[in-house]
Image (cartoon, rainbow, N blue to C red; front, side, top):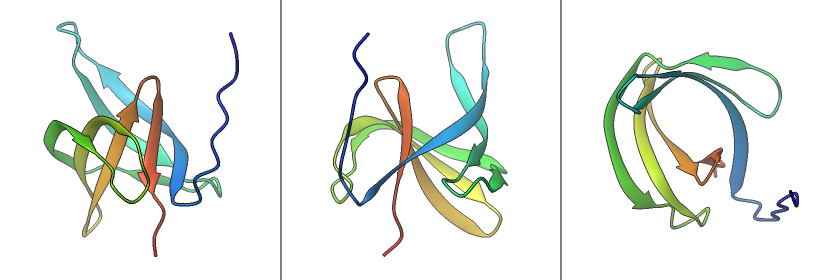
Length: 86
């Protein structure tokens, strides 16, 4: 399998821990940022097909609560990414 390489500076690929349900659904429980810090996802408030306009890419967008912040976590093909902070 050929390795995918991307060079968009606004897109950060992250590791995600998730629960996969018997019905095929998926719920992320935490993410690991590029510096190795792990953040617990307190709640998933929305799941929908969406595009990330700044970071580029189309996939399933998970609207999540991490602490007091709302974040968007995208599952594009078989990889998770987030938009880099400005």
